[in-house]
Length: 450
Image (cartoon, rainbow, N blue to C red; front, side, top):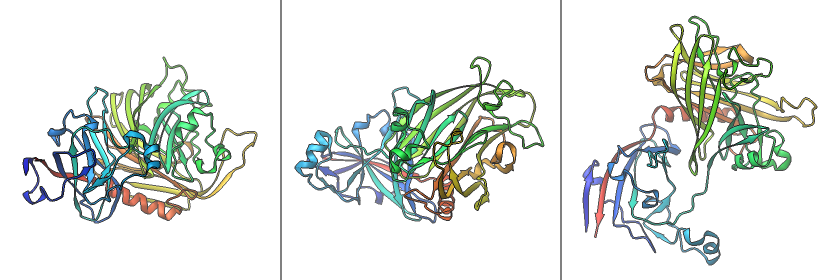
């Protein structure tokens, strides 16, 4: 017998699928969740986020007691003896009536209680799809990692690195991201930061690892922040270029008198990975500021999202606006500037700008590209500025809550996916639509059976 315990779903949505079972797991409680795609486009591995406020029945539950199942997924067969030996006692055994999927229950504020349940799924145009969260303790299910985030010493200073299997970003400079491309779908951040691998030379170790694919120098690189502090001017104030900074070396100086930074890994996969960047004691000469950024990389994708929260906002004048930007590709051959989307691509001879002895050969590629996306709701205005080697920026009207969001993306012709500049551009356009209209929880029902 099945009982409907709680529901915000239409009645016909409940009890529509046979119950998932595994030889050692026969749950008696589940939550049917409906995930809706409001777009006329197919979504691949689209992010889905659910909070305890949306499904109170999940509040405080341990991650080993929640199992995500696709009722239309292909069940796993009985594993072979060889597979059992490799997977050990925590491998998934034979399934029926669906397939267990990976999920994360992430504690973002580090208070010991999860804040967001996260997973990825495919959705057809205008599809509303039913998945199940089965409740009950079990310890089976290894999670292959498609995203990573690490912080480590890289050439004598601490560097955060967040990545998917396709691309990654790291902060050689603490306010502007380097872009990293892979030739194979592989995670490289732990190896690079623990084995003293130069980002431009790592291809000599293993070509699949790829390479750094952008020189940042004094530009905004693959993603950076700043402030428009002078009304009527497109000049940008930046944390790294404060009045006390070393203008020649392009670094902040004394941590007590100049801008300082702190880095933290919040989540390290398997489906998304997150780092927190704190910028403190920023005296621009026209105001004092402190902020927090959270960058998130997603498995299977070429983009990362960024959330910004200002903890201190003390401008001396009026009309100050937040800025997010990327470096414009030199010799751009394909670009897009439309609404909240900027794409810039060009063929490139990639080499380490610090290699003054020319010990490494330049890597010539058909294209390397970067993109920046802002949600329409922010009503940000695009500006191209020649400042610091040329950058594509968005000006955000000041918000009372001090919170802003944007998305950065990258691709190159050497990768497994998005091998052409046009393909990269089209991908970003599609991602921008999803970013503006994320997949949503359309309803849920809690069910039980004898």
